[in-house]
Length: 123
Picture 1 (tube, helix red, strand yellow):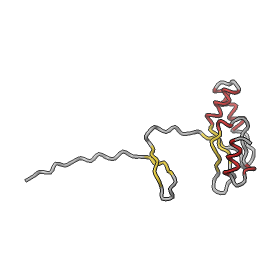
Picture 2 (picture 1 turned 180 degrees about the horizontal axis):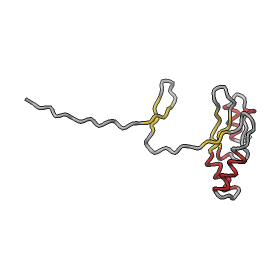
Picture 3 (picture 1 turned 90 degrees about the vertical axis):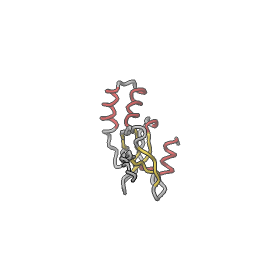
Picture 4 (picture 1 turned 90 degrees about the horizontal axis):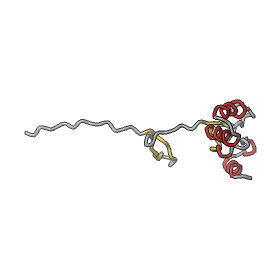
């Protein structure tokens, strides 16, 4: 059993139903599911394309086309893996805060509005 299989075994109630993509371990992100849904393996789409370019010696266009038709386009049931695009975040735009349940949440920080100081006339 490899690292990813062990992770799925430890984190999913019914790990036998999670479908893993062969040869794409370096693009594995984790497991997710919607409320009441079947757990699905999640992969980073850009890393998958990078793997195809390196491993299979493809251009970006060839790897993208192969990915779209043969990997993302392959339905294998309710547990079909999810291929996500990771959002690039500008440095400093988000900060980590704590909620009442002590779990980390990302919130957008807004700059404080500048207030004008009034000069008070002394008498």
